[in-house]
Each structure stands twice: as C-alpha cells, then as structure tokens.
Image (cartoon, rainbow, N blue to C red; front, side):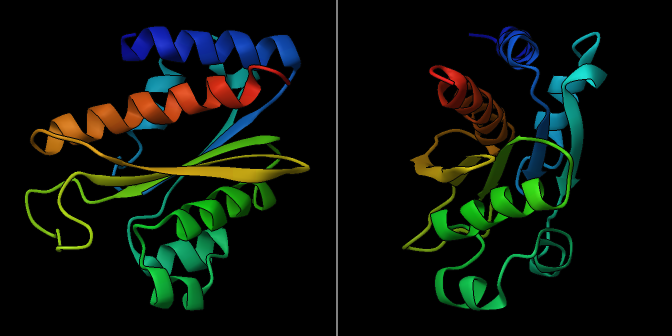
Amino acid sequence: MELMELAQAVSERLSERGLMLVTAESCTGGWVAQTLTAVPGSSSWFERGFVTYTNEAKCEMLGVSQQTLAQYGAVSEQTVCEMAAGALAHSHAQVALAVSGVAGPGGGTLEKPVGTVCFGWARTGVAPLSRTEHLGGDREAVRRQAVAIALQGVLDLLRDG
C-alpha cells in the first residue's frame, strides 16, 4: 500500500473508533506526522507529533529513561516502547506510535547496522507492542519504509479494538 493509502486507512480506523493518535519520531524526522496530516480532516484524529532526534529530547519530551538509553541505546525496542508510552502520557491521544532507527548512510554498528529500525505502538490501557526491522536501500528508502511500517502497525493495533 502507498503511504497516502495507509494514512487514509489510519484516518478511517481512528475516526470509526473516536480515537486520537500521537507520534514520537526519531529517524523519520516527522515524516509520519506529515503523511498523516496530509489527509484532509486529520485534526479530528491526529493530536500531535514529537520529533525527538537526540537522546536528550527523548528524555525531556517523552520521559524516556536515561538508564534505558544507556543500557539498550536509542535504537531499541525498549526505547521505542518508552517513547510510545511517553507520547501518550504527554498528549491527549489514546493511540501512539514511535520510531527510532539508523537510516544511514553512517551511524551503523555491527549490532545495529544501517537500516535497523525499531517500532513501538501503544494504546491507553494496553501494554505496548514493538518490533525491529532491518530495511534495505539508501537513507530515503529506509525512512520511507519505516513510515509505511509505522502506519501499518497502527492499523494492526486497531484491527480488533
């Protein structure tokens, strides 16, 4: 599915349920929020977006624990779960998505090579879900794929709810 098709599907699913969404982005730099707010009427279901590119921003804006960052790093499922939970806590939304990764071309390590992206999704009253993907391509390709996976994750989270 194209990004705008995914965004439209997210719009419909959130609207049907009367829910608001918040985003917490690092490597995508606000691309998820931009894609979502390109949908007409998004103010009825998109609450706000956080772009927390540095570790300091993740701690200050989302309440990510310094201990989590020190132990697992910014690109970890533990961190994105805390980002998603923090986004819910610092907004009026009931659904959150978080994304953090190594888009490249530099910054990769043996443990977390370029293309490693972690995703977290949370819903009020439900334990966060997370997963890690290893995406191929250049910086833009990694980021574009990350946006699509983040949006699909919202659809999956709301499938039964």
